[in-house]
Image (cartoon, rainbow, N blue to C red; front, side):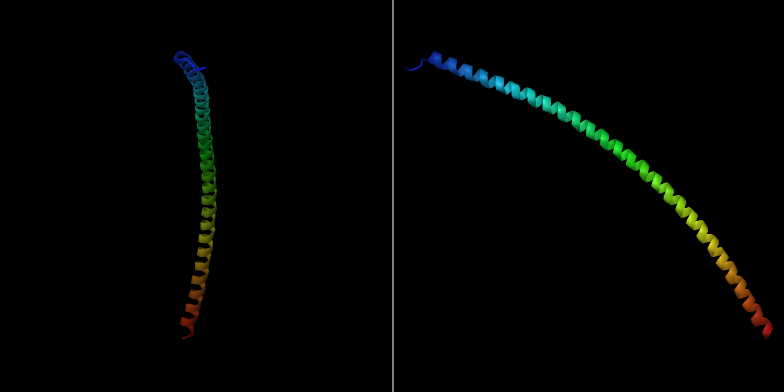
Length: 103
């Protein structure tokens, strides 16, 4: 029952056809996965860009709020410092006047 060369070649050709079909199916699936992955990566990049813009906007708002608060604190500190300097200069002026007039 030895198979002839033609029978063997026919069997090999059928095997190669089956392998070729399977490889074609695998290639089609790989192409679909590649397209899907490309789409997903594009969407992720878009979402990340949007999140970055949102974060930048929030940080800018926070920075403006903090700058306003610091400006208010500087103004308040400056007012209190001027008051203290005025009080101390009046106090030292009075002390100096009292010292100079008692001699």
